[in-house]
Length: 282
Image 1: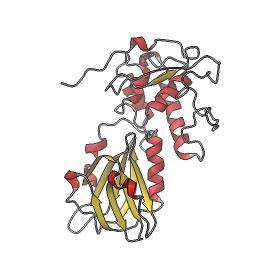
Image 2: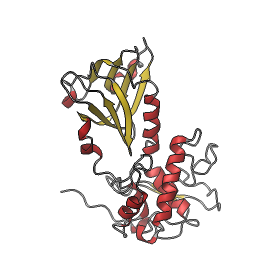
Image 3: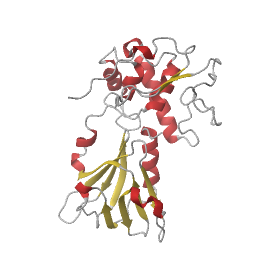
Image 4: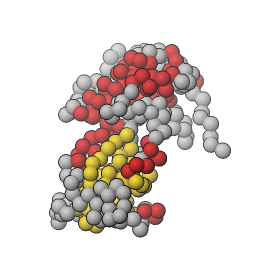
């Protein structure tokens, strides 16, 4: 699942081939960027903030350094092909970004969401509202605790999915952390040991992002069917107690109430019947 650790790993992978290379041709295939040209600029680095990827470029002729912002959501992807190679034709309708580099390689962005371009000094327009990110050097656990506690009645999983509180934790991590904390996913966040939750979340996300073979393995076992405690394990026995893991579907168009898995024995507390749909805008 594309979460903060996914985007962090993508950035490090792109950093192995793009920085220091000059763009010789660019093609931004979204209407608002169709006339923008990155040719002549050098790729400086890739930074991440939660699930947001920031590709930074050098200054152009008479222009300041710029940043290309993209969001993977559930299906976005980047690919880099070697000189003389292109993507399979069947993927071409999904391409939203093409960067041909002076090395002969080409970077492709497929199904990228929220694609935008702005001066690097204006990156806050995309990430300024976000909470602290455990994978960044400016990670502030005390601020994460403060934000999570701000509305103590919010269910644990809903609080973790709110990127303005802690950034980079998606539905997989929200479900697994609820299990690791030994509480129902719908336990009000004010009734949880938030300091312990934040410490555990940061440790898990960093381990997943940086340790080879540990990507989104929450149990310590990479064997198929045993890498997660509850996520994706509905109707299967809990790896800790043997009780059947349950799953409830998401509430339609409600980002605070995604598909949720839990072990009713290991995670006592409120059930999904306590869910209250988020207010609809307008």
